[in-house]
Figure (cartoon, rainbow, N blue to C red):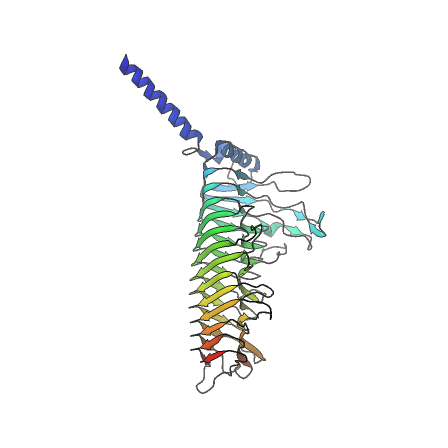
Length: 451
């Protein structure tokens, strides 16, 4: 009798424990097909995916599984269709994973200027966000492709971008995204922000391509790691839809940062920023952004009409061991940003090719930004003998040392290295492709010259 009672007690405890684990979502899987989803590329999966999100939110955690297939979502935001984003909120231990799965949004709509907010033309018509996370932690997103179908959209030229992101992280902690492909989104492929901000975001082996505004926007993040990612072709919509500014590969543009603090701790390693219509990479707020690194990254600006290949402005922003091609137009690397003070930028061990000015650092008289440029190959690729400066450096606190500046002999009479007002310029070499021909360097106002 005692043995039977013990067995019954153990069974009861096992049942209670198992139920608790299951209800906490530790082992529960939500197969989207169990909620009516169909990966045939034709069926509208909006209702099914809303059901999945609601079930996961009610459970508090779990694994959302997309079997192989193309999951079409026909719904989009408009005055006549008041739909919601696919929102996961308040979850702990959430995984969204696919087995060669594609989520395709409907892009067959026109974004008209039917809203006027603070004299800005906006539209009530825009894409839904197919993966939107709010106040979630311990999240994994992997093995998913998301096609925003911007190539099928059209818009009023004066309408702003809206919030049609493909993946949105809002006030989320400990997020890992890997092997994801976001492309042709109305706004950003990936958006990271929030009121409190996100913390601990890692993104690896991910491509964000052909989006309308940004490959990725970071507006509020503490501690981000990005490895082996590509942020490419922003603004190239492959259709009639006009791109939105700033059309960058990655834009770090802080919002909602508490007074007296700075967001940051963000590292990009072995990432590619290429062929974006705006800047390939930009960070413009040194007073509220700190500790940004780009290590062994590739930056290419061959097709971009923008003169800003990179905009580097933060409190401690380091570019180390990168290969930067500013293209054959007016692209250059801007080390500091006009009108912004408090930057501390270092460019080192990198190769920079440019047909215009290579590196630009020109602070206004009342601006204070520390810029250090060391051990780089800075190569002029211009074939046009028009009067200009290469590089163009006039910042008063600048340090320029151990660099190798190369200018073609065919343009060397017109192109002048400008290193004015610097703290020091030392151990640099200035050469052309012909022996005996050296560029004439301007050092006006530079305190220490030892080249």
